[in-house]
Picture 1 (cartoon, rainbow, N blue to C red):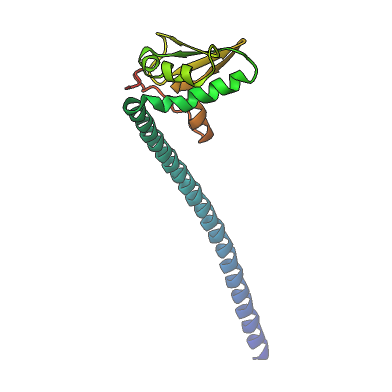
Picture 2 (picture 1 turned 180 degrees about the vertical axis):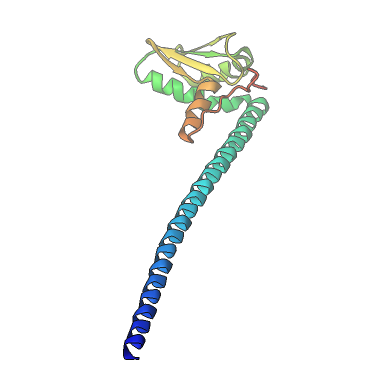
Length: 174
């Protein structure tokens, strides 16, 4: 009788150990599966967040582009800080600077620019290849590209975007 009781206890212990081992094994398996699912969910969430961020940046850039275009239509003199900065940079090394402008901007700005700088230092000319809001300053073989495309590209590159100044159809809606 004692032998049967001991055998029964050993059998119960073996069953309990087997059960515990099975539970631990299954628990590890489920933990690994759950960890994998969590990793997948985190990756998916990250992709969604990146997609949303890209869309927000795209909307912000499109809005900014329209604001800049509107500002240039309302106040063409908004181009002056760009012109002044380019001229001042070039005058550090040169005696004469040529500023090329679109006809519309030339008509509005050339007189003011010439009167601001000493006689003969700045020459403003019409460049029919430039659009309103564009300018190119040149002196002693150095050129500063102040076109809207160039200024826009530099601004959006800092944001990690490559959105062009022109619309997809090649127009700039100005």
